[in-house]
Every structure is written in C-alpha cells, then in structure tokens.
Image 1 (tube, rainbow, N blue to C red):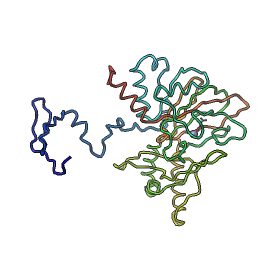
Image 2: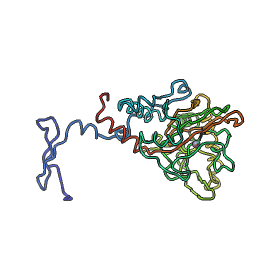
Image 3: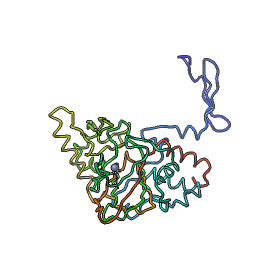
Image 4: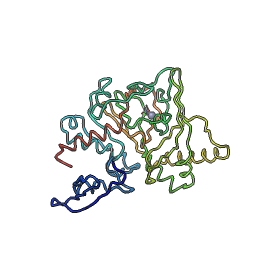
Length: 323
Ligand code: OGA
Ligand code: ZN
C-alpha cells in the first residue's frame, strides 16, 4: 500500500452503492450500501455477537428459555431458535435428551467440540470420597462462575442430568450482568473497585496449579459489562497494596450480597434427561445442598466455546426460513 493512498473520487454507483477511485494506481472499489450500514461501527456495535443481552432476575424461574431435544435435532430452524435463546439470555434448557452416560459430549456437538480443562473433557458431578472440588460433595454451592483461575475461563457450561432423586440439589442461576448493574446502582464505589483491581485466583491439587489475576467485573471498550469472575472457592490471597485490601474485600462482600438477593435468583430443578447450558462468563450458577441418603444425584458436565456457538448460529441463519 502506498503511504499516500487517497480516494481521488467518490460517487454513488448506479446500483446505489458507494464507488471510490483510489490514487495512485487507479483501483476502483464498489461498496454495497447494506454492507456499509452493517459496518458503520460506533460504541454500541454488536454485529459480531448478536443483540444486546436480555437481562433477567427471579421471574426466569417460571419462564426458563428452552426447547425439546426431538425438535432441535429434527429441525434446523428449531435448533437456531434455541441457540439464539442461549446467546441472548445466557441460559437455556433442553428437555427429553438421551439419559445415557456421556450424552453430554454428543449434546455439546449440537454447538461444537467440548473444551477440555484440568477436570477433563467431561466431568461427573457426584458426591465422591476425597473430592478435589466442592462440586463433588453434597454441599450447597453459593452462586459462582467456574474456573476464574484460568486466563480464559470456559464460555458455556453444560450440565446434563442423569439422576436427581435426592432431596435438595435444586439449581440456582443469577444473571451476572444484571447483578453487576445492581451493584453499580447500589454501591458505585464498590463497583468501580471491582472493575479496576484484579483478584487473585488459584486452583491446586496433586496434578495442577492454575493461577490468574483478573478484575471481578470486566468492561468492554464502551464501558458495558463484558464478563464476571466470582468464585470464593478458588480465590487466592489478594495481592494488593495493604491500603486497598480492606476496600476490595468489602466490595466483594457487597457484590456477594447483591448476588444472594432473592429478586435476582432463578431457581430450577433439573430432571433426568434435561440439559442445562449457561454462559459461564456471564451467568453465575449454584445449587442447594442435597441429602445423598435419600437418593442419587448425578450430572455430567463439559464446556464449549462461544466462537463455536456464534458460528453455528450464523451458519444456520444462512439457510433459515425465519430470520
Ligand atoms: C459445577 C457446579 C452445580 C451442581 O459442577 O461446576 O457448580 O448443580 N455444579 O451440582
Ligand atoms: Zn460450578
């Protein structure tokens, strides 16, 4: 490219597009009007990732976005509609899936290949002896995001229910974008601290020692909330100047209070054969304690990348009859 390249002439073409003649060289470019409109940019441009997120609270307990396995495997339009719900709400269920072990990996394949972590390509959420995670106990889990100790935490988490007969164990989901927005309104100083200063995360067991530092709330270039990392179970000691540690702890506590606000909590009981998927970088998940002496609870989980989900939606949109 010559450094002095310039648009020597600009005109509207017969087709209604923009025609530019470049000098030096005399190359002519034609730009379609719709293409230009689609690339006009601006601070709120979301053309790469779909419409603005649909934020939610407790009301989602009675209106969980979902679809039937038979429908999404039988129709590309139904699959596209369900994947768009997942993209926009950050959570969706699929009912009537096969109950065979490892179906979760085939279900992930509706979107793309599973992304392996230190917990494997898939993981079994059951109460186990000598657990290396509190997920593998019968304890209640306060709402959290998985693997904030990774530089790039997994995007979407799948939990496939094989058995759920034990008393307790209901799932809880909280929209982290909504929670961050509530914190910004209720406690602006705490919000500012959590968007600016990193928290140290660490997981270690016999085989791994995985650490990362990142702010609790990450913002995009327009200042909108882009990601939430929140998990006391894998927090390390905070490495910050002593005068900031107290304020950070108080800010984290204030966020925890918002996250536990019943007005934000969506409660859902997973039934055998149901798959729950959520955006692990937006939606926090947890569960009530369960009593393993009253029955069995067995979920299988894995993760998939957002790139695969968005790509799948775009490819389905190419041939969709509804847009
Ligand atoms: C997990 C987890 C929730 C559940 O495995 O990451 O949080 O419902 N499990 O058991
Ligand atoms: Zn979890």
